[in-house]
Length: 292
Image (cartoon, rainbow, N blue to C red; front, side):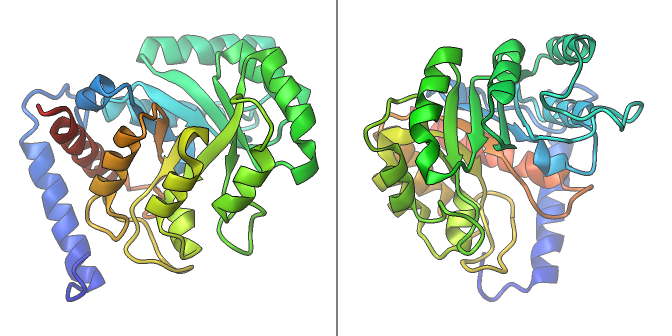
């Protein structure tokens, strides 16, 4: 963000940009606010949403919003209410067999795949839930002494575990060096979920973290923040201090094929236009990276 632009001016500009983007979307369906990320798919990348971006909604509503962005992938988080009609039912291994079938059908009908689940536990019940639901990776922050057991469980269930980093002071894994130590000697079923924003809140340059973690990166909780530091907040990608374009170029250089989950933790309840800006910017950069 331009250091001379105050917050009010930025938000007005972002809103205008979003409105212009939507107005120009003549190819969008009536229920869409963005066109997805087709150029990302040419790089072998999948862009989707972490349902936490819509934490005040139900999971099924989060699926709807993900689909409205033209995206085909979602990460669920534990204990989000399942639907407006059934707020007592929560996403996770507590769902009944019938509820799991209904969720899978809803996802199929919307053309959205449930790729990932977290941030949460790593019990056998969680892995059984993941396998049944077709979830590829569980995102967690386990104890440092749990990885022998976790590696065996991942291979048994054919589900990866990605270590997440909350900010410094709130997570064992805020420093990527700790993640590397935790996975040392373990199979590639165990790796990293790099949270770009939480690295920035911990005053860690995301580029430095990505270069260190390299092939251990399984997915990203992708963000761009207005600044470094604990009190930073999300902004539409490409307008903050993360240098999204350089990050994506580095991911391509390393040959990584991660899942990118939009985790927009600002303006909850009315962030969809800003998420749409993120999608559009991401695919624009991907188009440049593919030479399109």
